[in-house]
Length: 207
Length: 207
DNA sequence: GGCTGCGCTAAGCGCTCGCTCACCGTCGGC
DNA sequence: GCCGACGGTGAGCGAGCGCTTAGCGCAGCC
Image (tube, rainbow over all chains, first blue to last red; front, side, top):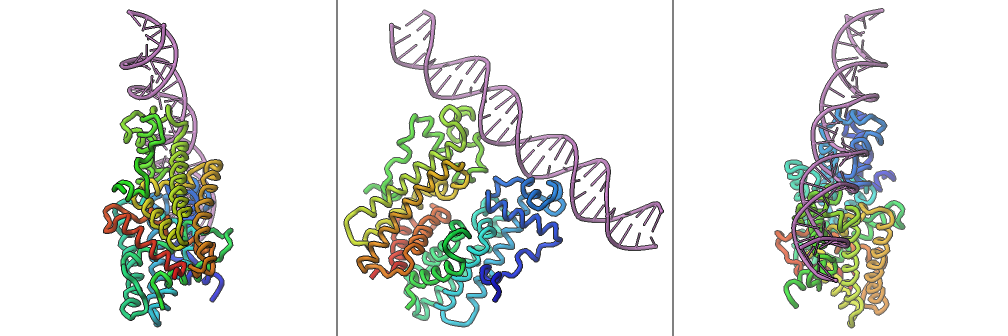
């Protein structure tokens, strides 16, 4: 496994699905700007400038500034869901699968922190239709984690009183990594992933 | 204990320290607007409108829109720190104090969710000086929780490998309540507080 | 070599933003 | 009964926003 994969939860080259090249450069610039300043504080001139283009160029590839956020959010949620599904569907005990899910999910939130910030914290800036689409993806994210917790309870591996509440707390813990993590900090994404996997196994009372 | 106190972590009447009355009405309106839409998406016209005043009235009581955010953030952080200090300094075992700290901190984040959202998620909208002041308060918040965890480790009540990392995770878990909690949800602030206190005691390996 | 289509830019439109200013009603002190 | 202080308003300023449009340079085709 390459270093890039280790810090991105399996993501080799991000945004490679966005074409043509100019559209990808604009999208990457938007991710950086949105993560740094927030969607509403970011101007289309700032995005275009970071991509080395004129403000008008943005509107050749995207209809509006909101469409840019929508695309980022959609691709990011797909990726996050992918990561959790890979962990949930692998072979192994519920304990192993939960630890894998948490550590890779956390590695993604820390390693690709700019993307994760936009994905997790700029949801409210989307219009009703786009938000509804993303909320549906988030429900699937919740379902994946809840499934592993339920498996662990059923097999007697876990000791959990409130499955839905505990699932919510586990996801909440992972998601908030995108808020506080910084590359200047004392921990690598891998270390945070390992620490969090341990903490979550304690939360579910894994034996 | 009254219902108001139960859902606000001891806060009887919020913002009573803000005078005169018009300044408090503007500030309460700003908290609602910032929590709902975010600082940058909120206009001074919106804030004034919610307070039943003209846009110009805002500038009689506050120098800028940012000063409003600063005051909200400062008062909110003071309150949050108060809540944690009360729990940390009470008599009892580290286990009891940590459970008390987490449940009351979470009750505040859930019960006064609008305030907590602004306090926890609009920090980046502040200028450098104001942000530095708030960051110092947040370090004190961290120190309070870390103190309890260290006490528990010293007394043998807790089993924690990484004290700083675990403290960070505990606080992160509590803070993120402000993001997902809603009054329409299935849980009351008290229920979330109790659930989270239990989860945190598991995280620190309380016997 | 001339033509066409496309990615891109320079300029700028209409609008709304944070904020200001000239003015006004009310109320306590004398 | 008049006056100054103060909290408030209506109108609007300059700036910067998201987005549009007319036109330009260049690669590909005949």
